[in-house]
Length: 138
Image (tube, rainbow, N blue to C red; front, side, top):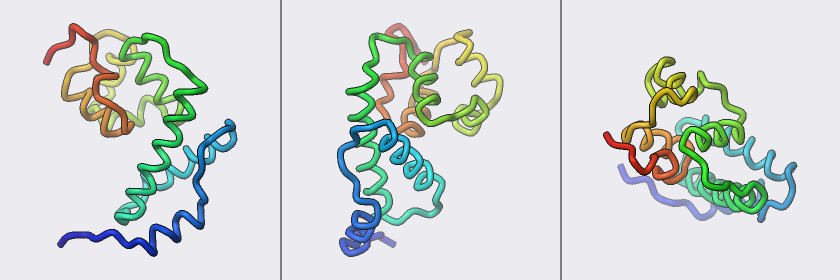
């Protein structure tokens, strides 16, 4: 069954939440809270998926402008994204598969593997390259 986009439903989301470019920390915090709410909603409608993508773009733009990230390693990137979403190490266990894997990565005991980078990218809705060191292989 193909799910179709319902413009009226999407318009209702827009009217209810009134998204706009984020300019303050408080607005960013509210947007992040809404993203977290939507991410945990199951199943999401097509309209909620599109709205979630819009919110992530707005958050990303705000954070790029207000928290410029200099050249960082992949571990720092994971930690930054975790901090931005107020996540704990245990929140990454379902993504990376085990507490040991999460611990080894965050303690910089081993690099992030290609498949792990893909999973992290999907989870955080960012580019996979952020988690891969230039000499990383898998």
